[in-house]
Length: 261
Length: 83
Image 1 (cartoon, rainbow over the protein chains, first blue to last red):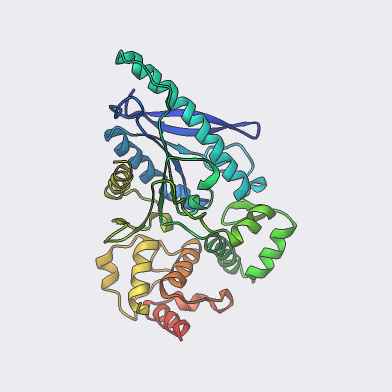
Image 2: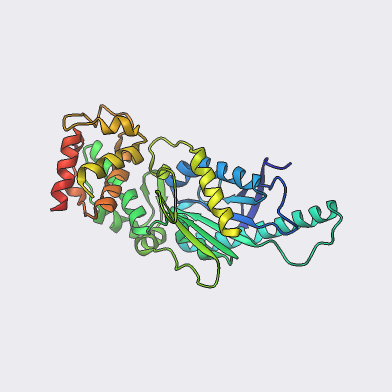
């Protein structure tokens, strides 16, 4: 059913991880582009999720299908977070892209039968759209187009996680430093802001930067704000109380659609 | 960016406060305890955003509850870090 949410899965590390799909209302031709959304990391994902799903519905109205992937250990995933790292998440992006491409090919074939046209062998172009910390792992799959919103450095995400733990300890009358927590994190998983962060994750986050956007593919990075290469909205990923922003979701969808135009 | 403007914009973005409400804050406006959105988790995001927007470094050892008591104290703390 067009416009409805559909649950697809991708296999990863022996488990089935969720891809939340919104099919296009009326596909733009037989091989309409598909957008794979790589979400922000940790709490920022929860805070952005509703607005990202709104953006997916907006894309569907523009004839563009999309999927929002669960990262292993996050959202509905049954995988333990403490064994994940940026490297495993990068591999998960590749696995999600493969499953989504197969699903898109099936949908295109069914659509071609319905339209009584002959399906071509080529597949729908894949767009990878990543947000915040998702930009650190979005190079896990090949894509025809790349789009990024407010790319985050790993060190800044890690610092915020460490600070949340430090502030929480202080409320309980204990003092702990970021250096002490990082030393603990080298030995085994530690709890930071409700996340079990393993040694590999802590070490990889510390120096992680978004991969340079390839010069050979159409690509675009946007920030929040007004002016060129900006979309209007507020930093929902920072919000203590998650909200949703329909205008920002529409801005995200419009900007992605323009990249494809 | 001026510390005053940065602190106001971060309060709007991180806490989701109404921009008009934050524009009316003065030095004596109480923050911690008076604004329910400002909890220990929000404090972490707020400090990291202040660092990014003002291009400053904040040592967590320098952070105590006092700086979040009033708007004026938070601005003064940010200004001191700007040097």
